Length: 320
Image 1 (cartoon, helix red, strand yellow):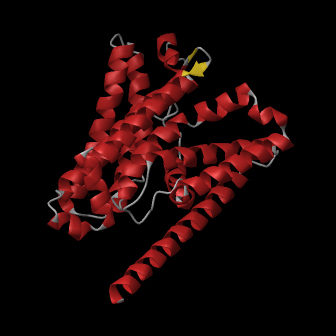
Image 2 (cartoon, rainbow, N blue to C red; image 1 turned 180 degrees about the horizontal axis):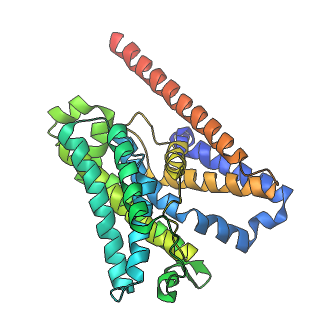
């Protein structure tokens, strides 16, 4: 029990519960089925990308192209839906394939040239957005077919996007905890040189990490299109910061070595509740960026201080 209480995820979860209680007291409609459904559905795409970002951050990397990868997928899927080839099976396969390609490009460039991920992903962020804007001239792709929007329908009162996100969270958690690939990610983020000496293929791990993140971005594009029923190629600007914030708030160490999918889920819910709470409290939406920025600064500062404290304790033990 003591270890559970000391976990970063536990403290964030308790804050989330406190926020929900406070918002319910302020506005009883907060806990209504409709409002909870809106909070969950509107954050599924971000949650799916945040799962991938958790993998990246644990390796001590970063990917600021996740939102553009999602829109790259969403745009091509919307265009495919307008052709005779458009059907549920080809759309799902195309989403995963497009995401795999964009993620693999990031992973290949980072692992091949050993350039810091933020440089590569800043570049691909502009490239992916530029490609879709050139091909669409920035026009909105409206009125997606009913079979496409059916991906976001509600079954037995449960929105399907939430089911997709839950499955992805479970798969991602399993990969991190029970596979060699997952252990390699933690080892690489904890101590890169030690992982190398232990036999971890760092280049392969980096490549697979960014590729997997790309696949999840492709899936997020499919979910986003189905929820909105249309596609705006120039949309989702700034989402990458929200995705990073969600993972960091959920306890993932931005310096690498630690993070859990469960914590990231809590972080996503925290972001969603804060956004919804500001609306419930009639706070102007532009305050959201300020709140998110403050949260990121505070959480990263806490992570850094904890890491320094842990390192100092290790040094004291070694001296003794």
